[in-house]
Image (cartoon, rainbow, N blue to C red; front, side):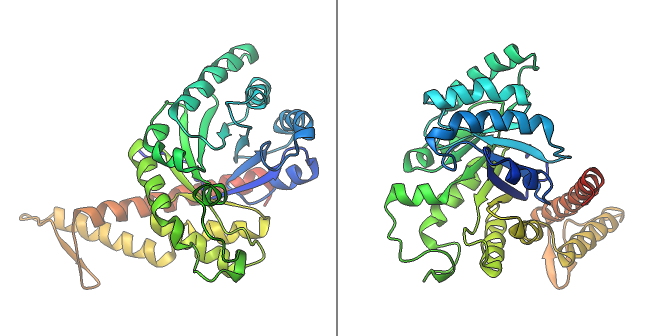
Length: 314
């Protein structure tokens, strides 16, 4: 069964910059990522790790999920991250550059050890993986289904592009190709299919030029159309745009409600049919399932936003 938490926007900030973490905790993002990997200089890893544990406990995060992107689990720094971070009670750990299911299994073992040491119930901390290399993409189905702790997967477009050797004609708002660029379509589609088959959430990495509102919107809308549940963003100003893109539009909700109403009416007939007509379209099984999911997602988002605002005063 597909996971049901509301995970439209993932805002990220370096864990050693406590002023940014305070803004992160008070942002309108659905999910907060505390960064320990690429965004932290090697000389600051220990300080960032300690800051993450402290801020996880001290800040009021409301109802938002709190995820820490750790260093690769195949490194000493990654093992230290897991051993220390569980004491801060994060909701999940994000494993970067995952290339095989063995990394998921190793992380799960280390998490169980750390949970026992911290007096936390086994299985409390969930696992997220990032697909950022060709090797990882080739194992993405096994990675997504590797362990019950796995709850989501993020496609890391920047590192993936470097790994496969794309020709960077330009970046950001000056790209000569539309967002999202065609060279990543296969990888994005495969990540979505693997995640949905495993019942976990697929998340895209969004538009890096955060001042480009239209580019942010276009990238998010296409990712939503491809089946992603949400997107990583890099600045608070992107969050409302991305949240809107990954939420059902009013006209979609109205369309879905009309379908469900007509299907119920048809089912009540003495000689019930299996097809209804909505706005000139013939609607059958798959469209009904889609309509029901739109309405359910709309209600989850509305309830989540109510809880978010009640808990943070937004």
